[in-house]
Image 1 (tube, rainbow, N blue to C red):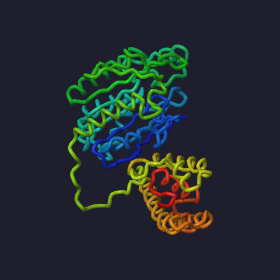
Image 2: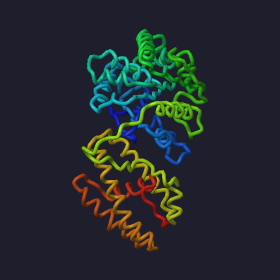
Image 3: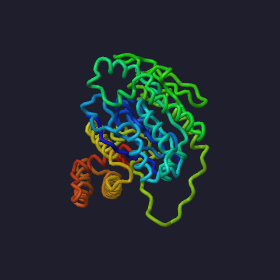
Image 4: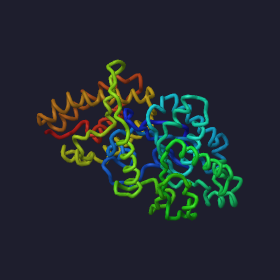
Length: 398
């Protein structure tokens, strides 16, 4: 079942460059950008690698219904309608004040083109600012001229294919017009275009070939990737060509931007960014638990921190839920470091004494404080392992 519309901040709200990840047909705002076989310490979700590698990025994911089959797509918006919804959401959060980049897979690239086009043609100053602030679009296996898959699917399953599949049929005049508009918009507004295309076929064949993947825009040549349509946007590590290319270009773009001006002292204190890794300790979760003689907990700990991470990333951009999670993390970190780490671990306490302190001085007080929000022992335990993964708490003494 396709996901609902959502827009979420991954990390780095205070960056100098906003980067929005847009999935494609049948995709998901997290799974599209995750490789379960990834070997990096930040985990399988590679936008987090970018956040660690490229200072100054504020990263976001856009999730929206994009079905293959008509039974799930009866109420789905077309590209133009969806673009207007996205623009209203982005404008509501104040986007357009900083340079903006879209990283798109498949159908997501067509949506990004429609977003920029609609923004630049709009009389709404908030929408238009989003268009004029756009600096680059990364197209990953985007079928600018349609996909062979859509033609085959339409021929054999016309009664089942969704409206999005109809749009993706090859040589669709709507796609030609959208690409012409994109070419004009990118040329007129100095929007860089970077293209990656698949070389491997899926079980039903090559989905987006080079002629369709190349929009004919900009000065950069399309780059072939040793992957199929599904896995081209899922690098396994930092050495993957597509990750290296996107990282290099985003690094160059951030370096070309002026530094963010110093803010005044009015307003609220900035968040502690406990969802970001602590750069002072780059050990992974397994190593931290081993160093604390808790290797036997790794299986459950990794699953627990992944549960918290998925929930944390899905809470949305600057929503009350996100602030609530940040407050809970801050409380857990403060209580753990005060009553468990310094008071017990650093003084050579036994496992039984440490576990009792975790229960009595962290889990129970946090549950009591957040009882109206239905916090449970599992919620707090997951947060503890999440903070361990992010290097904000540790189980071994210095």
